[in-house]
Length: 478
Image (tube, rainbow, N blue to C red; front, side, top):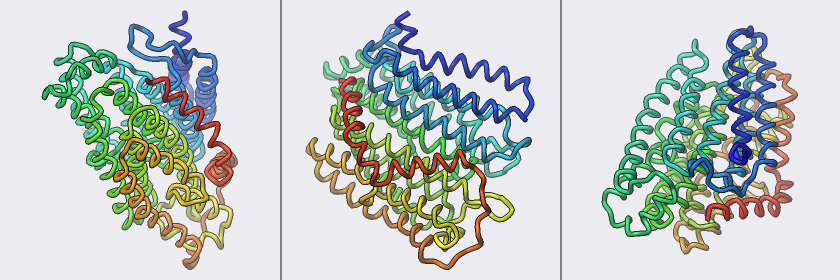
């Protein structure tokens, strides 16, 4: 029974999502709102269950997954972000036509996959969790079947995702072939015995990290991100940019620290390249964008680069820095996309152009101020709370002796601040454009307010408690 206690959140989501799927199959489309709220309740229950589930049991089920503080902290990021994505869809899709019952069910199955990913201590478990997330994500990307952009986004995501899964699986097969094991502890032992000098193991390591890099949209495996983010429905884009990205990054942290720890010198070079390439390409690629969702896609690539700086630092300090960064990043990004949801013309149709934000401070001052907070926080400009996670990853890099990497990251942050500040300039200094329609969405408004408060200077009150939690969670990896 202790085994099942360790996976209590996963049991709640699995059983609940299967039951909701059966209800969705027989209920009418009018019940989509009720099913959405039930999905949110399941995710809230799974989050609360993390308090009762043991976080010290270590590997369970023969070493397939781990019940530790790292996995629990990751799930505390993933589950609330998934719940917010469900609520965003509940108010965004057109009633009776697009808002079908399957949307919250797909999010729930994705949450189960992400939960398995961050808990996996075996390459096969990792792959199963990743595919469960991917299969649901392909459907979500093309959720608006009558929209050409959504269908194109789903097709691109599916084709490139299948390629990345093949690369990842090939890397897993190489590592298994040269070590005879798929467990993280077995792989670490193999690399400790001198596996870093084995060409076959190094190739397996490179293919494994390449597959993970696609899932986190790190350069050079980022090519799908702008098109998919632009074409997918806005609530789905918000989901892709937060929960799955955080799950994939933290999965990568567990793989590098636990399974590939003795080969740190080998994978650190790959991570440093991916970090710097993601930071600078994400910064420069966003400069000429006129679509807010494409701009936020490059922002997500840029932010992944900063998280990878923490991973490159390695050890407990680096893992803690990544956990801290992803926790704050998810809140900032959700807040930004909640603002995008409210960008609608007088007919109520979604608008995604930056030009439509012109003079927003004169027409909707509270809305403009919320967007101002999220843009400054994403840029890492003091005194917003988004400055602190960047400082944490830079400190981790300096602590590991990677001073040039930290300096390059700071330079990239300065370059990337341009396009965030450009949005603020458009809202506060340009001539007003056509006014937005008034959106009656109290739930989304409250979520936006909560996110804005967290990433404002008030968020500095969380430094102590959040830093303590991330340190303990990172310590459970080592």
